[in-house]
Structure formats: C-alpha cells, structure tokens
Length: 406
Image (cartoon, rainbow, N blue to C red; front, side, top):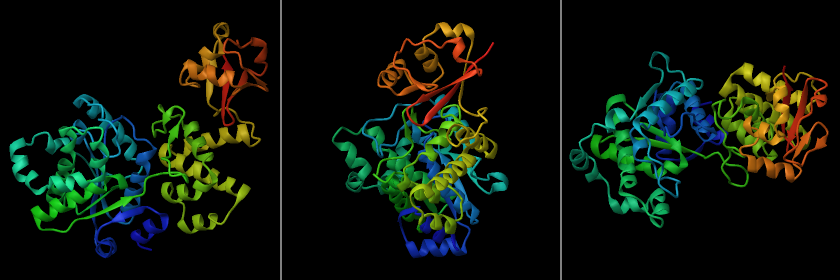
C-alpha cells in the first residue's frame, strides 16, 4: 500500500493540489517536503501532534521531511485562526522555544544522516533587505487575492495590522527558499494554512517555473467539531512538566466513544486493518480500544516505560490493580497538616487556582477516601493516613495519592 493510500485510509488528507501528480510522485520519487511549526512556546501541544504523525508516515515511506521552525515568522505572528494579534516574542524567547521543540520532534522524526532536516526561517528572513524583498517577492502577490484568503477575511472586521498582513509573503518566501536550496517540492500543514500554502506554490511557479504541491491535514477535532486537546488546565502539552504523563494518558483513555477510531487512525501507528476491525465494535468493547489508544499515544510522546507506568496507575485506580506507586502523588509532611487541604492541593497543581478549587469543593466535586469534602478549610488529619496515604478524587476521573512523609 502506498503512503498516499495509507494517509487517505487514515483520514489525514483534507485538501490537496494536483492529486494525480502527488500520488505518482509519492509512489515513484523521494519527495522532500516541509511542515512549519511556530515556536510560540517551549513545548508542542496535541494540536501539533497530527502534523508530526503526518511527517512520520511520509518519512517511513522513504520521503524526506523538513521541519521548519518559524523563528523569523514568529516575530511577525500568523493571523490564521486568530481573532487578536499574537503576543510579540523576543529572539531569546524564540531560541529557547526552538530548542524545546526540537527535542520533542526527535521522538517522531529521524534526523540522522540527512534523513530529515530541522531548519529555522530566521536564518534567511531576518537578513532580508525590505526594499529588495518587496521588489523581488512582493510584486508577485495580488492584494485582491490576499484579501480573499480566509485567514485575512476573518481578521478584517476586528482589525489586521500591516505587520501580520506580511505573513503570507514571508511564508510563501519560505517555500521558495526551501525549493531553491533544498529541492523541496511539497508543503504539508493544517487545513487553516491552505491560503498561505497556495501563495507559496504560486510563488515557486512564478520565480522558478516549477510545479510545487501542497496537502493539508484535517485538524484534530472531536465528533462535535471542537478542537481536541483542551483541558481544565489549558492545552494538552507534549512536555511532561506542563502536562503530567498520567494526565496525558487519562485524557486519551477518556475520549468520547465516537472519537476513539479517529484518534487511533490519526495519532498511532496501529495497523490500519486492525483499526478498521475495531471500528465495528460498540459499547463496552470500545473500552479496550480506548486503553490501546491511551497506551500507544503515550508511548509515542513519552516512551514505553512512562506509558507502562501510566497504564499501571490507571489499572490500580480503576481496574482493580494494587500498585499505586505510579498514581499522581502529592507528598506532604506533618507540618502541612496545619494547612487547609485547599492550599495544599492548589500548590501541588491539583487545582489550577484556589478559586477553582474552592468551587470544586463547594459543588461536591472533591472526595477524600470515601467522603465528599465541601469545606475549603478542611484539614488532613494524621489518623486518616493509617496506610501512609489518602486517595483524593477530583470529579469522576482525576485521582491523586496524598502521601504523608516523615
């Protein structure tokens, strides 16, 4: 099965140019392609995950990825899908974020021996002469066409700065630069980048008299069309310091039944024939599919050992297991027994804020052992720790082990 067929069966491809030519190129050539990543944080989140899987499938089929980190374009800000202007980042911020992103990406993509490249568009964009750029590149962009782009239209009502209006030119120039210097002929990306990708294709055609291609992947949404990866504490990060491994595992363990198969197709390397068999399952049988999803996604992002620990913790809490060593743990001392439980759990990150924790407790969403605790001033008592720990449940799915240490 060709990679094009694999991607199609898994539901990756949303829009593409030159379908027959792309299919033929992927079957007969070693294609160099790129995907861009904005270094707006020092970690990627689950929204980037699907793009990395897109790259990984292509690399496994023998094609060469370029992971393009937008160190230059991040200083402008992509208006696509945004209602307000992005926060401006310093060069130091961007460099720190790029280092964090590369470390995560190496878990998915093999960068050894030139099998893939990681480039930073700051290396060519920040040294451009503005007048020369306008004369050489700007002349090929029609303002009328740019105003028809969805990413631009959505921002016109609230106001679009001229700074952001330049973004399409810069992304188009990226494609041209990569084509000229690295033989890149294809861009992949999220469907919200379609207008920018078409601009790059057109620029390559005008400047180089060559055909270039683009494919967009579907955005990761649930059955209601809402973006996946949002949690009470914000985005679902791929960095364990931002989203603990157990929380990451449990997110996928608890996805809606309607989303299990879609996530298996897009976010794992489980054989597509096996996934299509799972597609016929219903009801409680889907529980095993959810366990498979949670383990496979966690293994890809955090490694097999961490995935095993998260699975073990989940089994101990919800599946009748006994090993609680990998359950999310909050350690307290006897001195902490004088502090309100709300303060202890907030400091440990169980609640994102005291006000959120207070609301959780007052609404009956917090259980200590077998008892609901609704009083925010509640204190842990030493005699409650007869086994050395207490289990605190937040809502139906979140469980923490509070460990009393000497």
